[in-house]
Amino acid sequence: MTRHLRLVLTAVAGSLLVGLSGAVVSHAQAPAAAATYTSDGKLTFPADYRTWVYLSSGMDMAYVEGGGGQMHAFDNVLVDPAAYRTFLQTGTWPDGTVLVLEVRSAEAHQSIDKAGRSQGGRIAVEAHVKDTARFRDAGGWGFFCFHGEQPGARIPATAACASCHQAHAAVDTTFVQFYPTLFPVAKAKGTLSSAYLAEEKAK
Ligand code: HEC
Image (cartoon, rainbow, N blue to C red; front, side):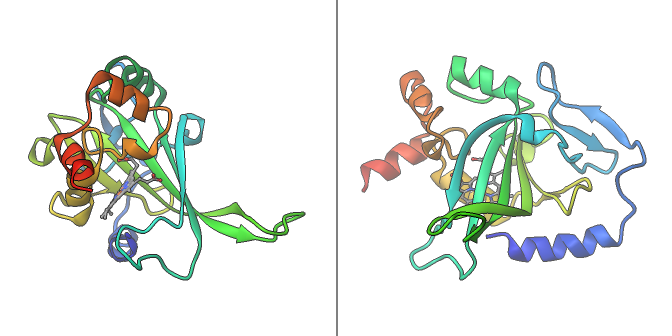
């Protein structure tokens, strides 16, 4: 879904001197300091995201009829632990939340596997960050795409990322309907978005 943007961002990242220079200037609000930014507004790569809380994996998900390519892929979704704890209490995300979507290849016939698929190399990493002051122009959320582990550039609020998440995601522009430990919490706390509820009702 993000191939085009990745190509563009690859070109941009290649032409800039980024990262590794100690240019981190600001922090997300307490208690979650999962998001830090460079002086030019890029999101620092969250190097420890694989120690965060695991929410779900999608396999070969496609968002339009007939969508999906030849290549098989998994996506893994993780969230910073402080945000996860707050969600369990409130059914929604605090300022400073960082959610990561990691795409990995789906490999066949690895080792003793005769039939299914297992996860291979990392193909892409994207982030969805809540910061109501910083992203005031976009409903309080910013989308970022990383090129390797360099700081990731913010994706414009006008891109398809924001419109799909706003129109279809179950809680505060995040796809909690696909995260089995959180969906029951959102239902119980009554935090499902009106867009999501209307879409379900129309089915
Ligand atoms: C047509 C709909 C659609 C578009 C466009 C889209 N996404 Fe998503 N996104 C999803 C769905 C569905 C999930 C849930 C994936 C899963 O369950 O594994 C998701 C999950 C995510 C997550 C995990 C956290 C969350 O918000 O639930 C991130 C991060 C993310 N997308 C980033 C992006 C970025 C960056 C773009 C644009 C480059 C983008 N998405 C475009 C549908 C979309």
